[in-house]
Image (cartoon, rainbow, N blue to C red):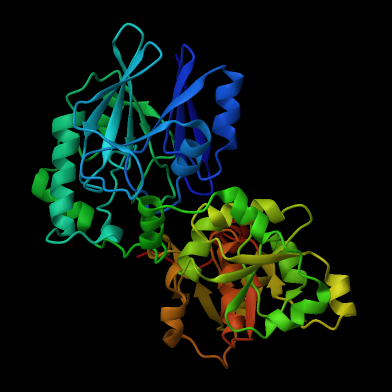
Length: 466
């Protein structure tokens, strides 16, 4: 018996391959499916089932493409209503993969169709459970408000989730290995552990949903208090996963159009086209196409694209380092942003030659910033999350989290100078690129972010905790 976890850090998402005796099942595959096909071929196995834990909102699953190529059956839980051929199973249904058995456990709460898959080994002993977005490590899936159920509140869903976890999962063999759908950083939960697998025994000790530290009503309140609105692209991804989508190979093929230097200025004047610069931060700081938004491949690229651009119908031109165009387009398509109309390779010298309007970012190191802060009062914008800010921050800093940057513009003045920072220097560059596009010019980036500021001088008096 082989169980392989395929973990995608950018999305904090895990898919799985279960392989035994010439057959395998794939759970919650990514949109690009070549890996699963190659893995099955290497193991001399046939992909028999594609098991979906629910209709995903944060990424586009590869179930349709994988089924079309391999002939594998798509499996969903009760209440699922896809607009394509799929097996809608009942609670307790069992599927065989080689000499293994997989039992469907209906665990609604995150969504109404959510299921967990309980795997039995060759001796018919329970081995592991794949919990999707029902049970995470140290946390649970938030009620999926992206689907907007009629006559059901987030509190209703939270209560259902509590029952699913405590009635369906908690009584199982405590030696089970839990394989969740997401890890730390995903917007599908609040406070997940960094680990990507754990025993049920340990989760019964550390996970508040089942360790007895809260009752059902307290769980509902804890889970739903300050529940953020889902990123704007989530409902669109749900629709793609329910109704269907184009194969990613077709999307990549139609998007791989190299934009010539002669055409850059033309596209700069198109209000409905967004330039996304995916290069390294240092490259963007030094020179970039004016008006482009930085969202580098080095960080959580796809989630930030979805969070900030919002509409999957946005026309995008990717600016990238050499040979990174396919990666950028692929990662856009993972979250349904299929309207990439072309790419531009990093060519600052050529941009100057063709009189393309370029820009740069004022950038200082943390030590320089501390020296300035000690002698004069300056404007500081902290683009970290509210929770990061509350833990520790510069006393005079204005907190405008990157995720709600544009709604916080009333806090700042276009004519004033501001120093921006995040935790490590990635989000602050994104924020500056957006603000400059909106007409803010007097902006300076603090290169190493808050981490660098703290390491420069831990005892400066301007730090404050709430």
